[in-house]
Length: 535
Ligand code: GDP
Image 1 (cartoon, protein in one colour):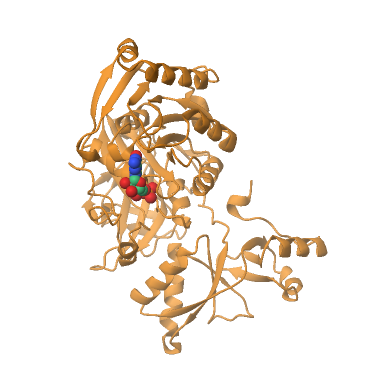
Image 2 (tube, rainbow, N blue to C red; image 1 turned 120 degrees about the vertical axis):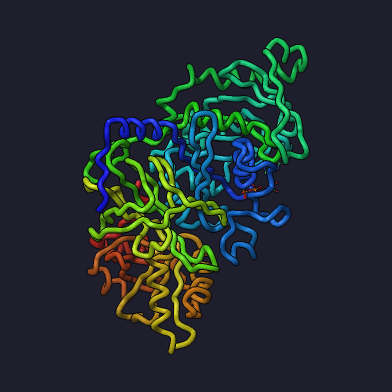
């Protein structure tokens, strides 16, 4: 086992590095501009010279975050990784979340690994279904949210109406850091409320480069813009009336959300977002453990696995476990303890991974993400540590809403089929349910979003050479239950009890009416909502 007794100077250095970290994810309904914004942020941080290099939409250049063939075929990003860059004195870790209307558990897991979320809203659409779902997950995790109203260069909703919608539907108090000057579709710039100046944007090469920006005093802005300026100031004033000042505590407590306006496509307002992240987003800090304590950032190394990915690189069929560093310093090659098994794990192959770009990393600090290659022993939720043991809270499994029976197409390949299903379950690609009645040959796969089934099918075929058939089940609702429910529900139409590999019994129901009927007829049965439905 490696040792990491830190000298006071080293501990100081780690505290300093943790304080520089801003680890966040952009969440949005698909098409709100997440990829475009990611690219624009990277452009600002000068990671890439011209925007367009990291986006995977078919009308753009090839993305670096598309790993699997399937992703390429569909032009969407399924996998998650982290982009790291420095900006001002901060180190920004932007974790990629899958960008598809279909939900997958990956998104939730990424949210377990970040300290803050940027909620991107399409100015023409307001809060959409997935925005609301993601917002709810953030609320449950107590994640602070920065809200960005995007696509302001296009006609859209009224800024004040958007503020009302945010307040009414999320309960968050909007605290503008910038306010759009010009209505949606006529985006002149923003009033930077902190510095009290007008930031004027001008298009530059269709957004492929950083926007041309000029700064003016409010008086100059009033003179140059007349009513357009006055209207912006009046509107922002109406919102500000309900906020005394920027309240960092309310933001951290998930009660208020800083607001910014942008056009990611034109690179307008992107620098302002970066500045807001550096100035206000929470740095990597002491992380709560399962015992009610906190692991200080300067304690010996610890972290947890928030995502496991296999088959990212067709050339080497590898497993990468993504670790969020919580304390100490990660040094490549060190040997850490895996909490769940008590075994040691050698971190010989540590990488920073973003899309196809990989870089070997030697050191990582709290807030950073490390990809460990050849990590098939690691599972989502595993804690890793040096010296003093620590266990971080499990990443909750989410309530599955889609269920399909899996069968091997070729009975002679049942062994491969079984191994593949087990592996994909370990990676957290899918939940697996079984019952004596259905038998081992026909496990039930349970997913949060239907695309998870496609990933399983694809991986079973390509990675395990075990083609399979899927058959949809009519269930749409699951509750945690006890083995006693099994005989009761065996005779009920539209319900069934299955055992999940983690030892939990799940009762599945066709719909809420089937559940209500069972509850009414069997008031003593234990039927507990799962995961996100808890609170
Ligand atoms: P994602 O699904 O959230 O990652 O969305 P994308 O970044 O792929 O953007 C979806 C579409 O909206 C693309 O055609 C983008 O070019 C476009 N888009 C993104 N941001 C803006 C913006 O600020 N203004 C305008 N007009 N279009 C945008």
